[in-house]
Length: 359
Image (cartoon, rainbow, N blue to C red; front, top):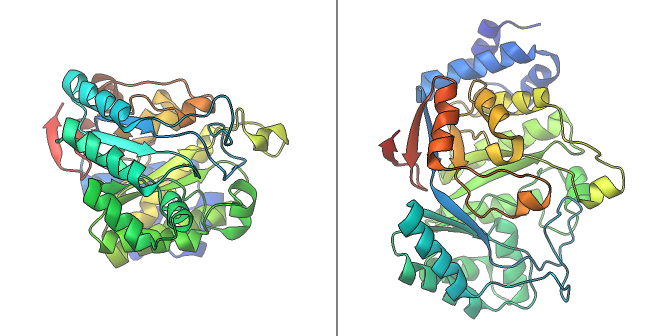
């Protein structure tokens, strides 16, 4: 079993996929975490960042019917909704004034009723009412869906959204890039290759993005490792990624749980391994998030000792994960406390990871 020093040496030399799978399966979890922490401190110091943001879903109507999702409603469902652009903009304006939010994270489903003009109005109205708030918007999967729906190219969709006020792209919809896993968890979404293609296109158009990875369902270690390597390779090509966010799957209220495919969340040790191996692979290429909304605040602080150095954001109004059983909320002060609890220095950042204030 490799020691902390040996793991660090392997990472510094440069892991390949087989090395990383070996470490996930065979290394002691504490040694893995300690090695990841050493690299994080070496490359990033002791600062843990997060943004003060609001999360809104423009609609919960979706035809993708992903078995991992508890949030969507099919067209015609009594609980389906589409938010008016004025409503979204008013909420963003209020939270910018009352809570100092600097980012709107907005996405939704694959809604066949929406037009290009809806998004034009949505983004423009937010910029009109809250001009200093960054809009981080729909996922790569939504770009593809609406391009097909509107018979436009992906470039045309991205260009139109950017002109209307979109500043960055959400990292969602990546799930796990391996196609055999995607067939189970998101059979009607774009492929992993297409997600990467759209991300690369967006980056080349001057629209940066996050990258996520949904884990803790039916994937194996080699799928996790391959996903992270492909994120790393994308970053090496474009430099357009802002943050890597491992998102823990919560099966509550999902089709996967109803069918008995995934009955409970993955154990915490697996969370630590996923975050640690992400740091060991990515090294100084990209920050790694401890996504408190999917793992809980207590475990998030532990992940800050295992390679993570960003807490994503305050995530006011988040609905998708709450639909799957997450019952969390956080203020700037609470996120700062999570970082301080493990001896880290919290810093409020903007969407583009410029530090606004040390807390």
